[in-house]
Image (cartoon, rainbow, N blue to C red; front, side, top):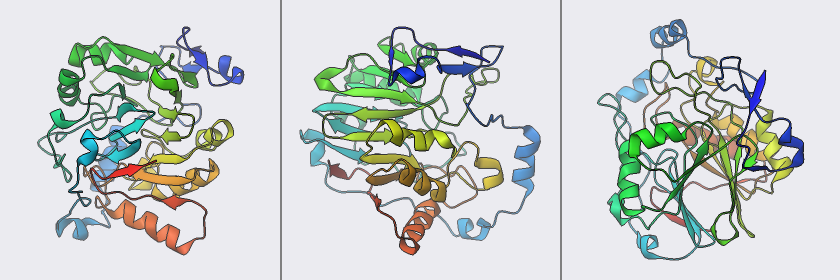
Length: 331
């Protein structure tokens, strides 16, 4: 197994200088544990199988509640705002970040159940855009171009070899790529952002399987530490986060997990998301990756209902922070 990195960047800890990011003999990125490549026969098996939620989905689905107060758009307070799916606006140390922004439907066949309740150009100027991987529900060239029209100086932080794709979609050149366990170069206002492993995969075209690195982010100020999972299946890399960081907010996906036999290698379930947050000793779990796109068997709001049921039936020390779309939650 080969390994790669961005030689210009430091690691979160000297232990990882030799670990680096694994690639196969052809140079395609690999997971540390379980490798995933969607096989056509598995997709056919899934689509031909009976969906236990079919009747419920036919009755119609609604997305999350939407806030009505958008004063945070012109405010200065530090906090976090869920904008649907895996997109969050985060203001930390007075710096504006946005994660995986996608504000349109994915395709004519993918209805959007949550829409941005204000215009994109009403967003504050963005300092850093964090892109976890290249899948279309996390990376939209159209959305990025609209954000960058206002935030021309924004810096894109992402995984190795993502820069070429982003430049082709947007023409934007202010991009920094990191390998797993690496720390992005010095940022404004004493902010530190690290790129961490995720168990997932990447593909955007017909022949680019795993050519672009996927991952998670840890965002740190003096007072607040946020873990943003991107897309991931459950494995030991999640517990490891708590070994190196004191996580206040574990922002983690809970949706697109059914059927689990097919999805579990690359999308975490509500049960395992709770388990992961507990293992990394996070203070709060902020669920995402549900309620926006119909990507799997379960109804779009079922992951949240399941998560809340799990916490009701089980004693745990983690607070679940369920927010409305576009609701500001201060740190």
